[in-house]
Amino acid sequence: MIETILVATDGSEDGGAAERTAMALAARLRVRLAAVTVIEESNVRPPAVDAGLPLPAFPEAELVAYHRARADGIAQRFAERARSEGLEASCEVVQGRSDDRIVDRAQEFDLLVMGRDSKASDRRGALIGSTTDAVIRKTAKSTIVVPAGAPLTGPIVLGFDGSPGSRVAAQAAVPLANGLNEQIHVFVDSKDKGRALSRFEEVRQLLSGVNHPIRETSSTLGRPDVKLVDTARETRAGLVVMGAYGRNRITDYFLGSNAAAVVRTSPVAVLLAR
Image (tube, rainbow, N blue to C red; front, side, top):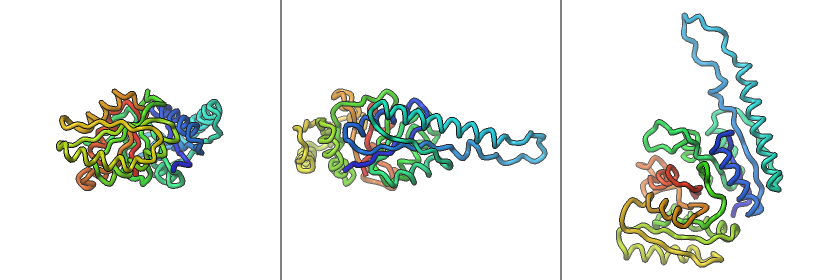
């Protein structure tokens, strides 16, 4: 059950999308919402001094003042946006390494919401935003990753492959679908039709508590991440729900390769269930 939601925001376009998604979820699920914005330590810390260079004094005080004012502005704007949606929610300003502070703060909440960010990470296989990448690899909390322009309503698409992670995702989808009054569309990928049938049988049991009839789609051709994203587009989904971990957690660097690919390319928010 989700009773508390934390949204991490940074004033960016994707951060704004995360705020809107978190507010919509909090209002529809009638749960408590809070936010956090981080003054990134590396932005205000003096760099290593190069001996012999005639440099002026590092403007640490001015930088701290600027980034604090910016963070306070983000926090104030969030509170005003929340009030306009009928919510009472505040945004905490903290300082440090963004990913570590967000992970620490999320420990007190049931669900974390973050923007996907538009800045590509330079690490192969990483998610699009470097902070988002680091947070979802470190946190033990279920996390929704939101791209700019993501819709706020629509059916839930559940990616199910029979793995332990996808079973966790199915269990998480039930209270979400009922609380949001949305239908679940199950996507099963399998190269074997018999195995796909058995997975549908299993997921029907896991989703037995859903109020609306579920819809089912399977695929035996193509990449599963592409097919899952295509399903989200075709159904005009408001949320994709899938397990955070694949079948091989070591080689996938503690995040399933399909999950990473879906987060990178999905036009709708993606819930990585844990």
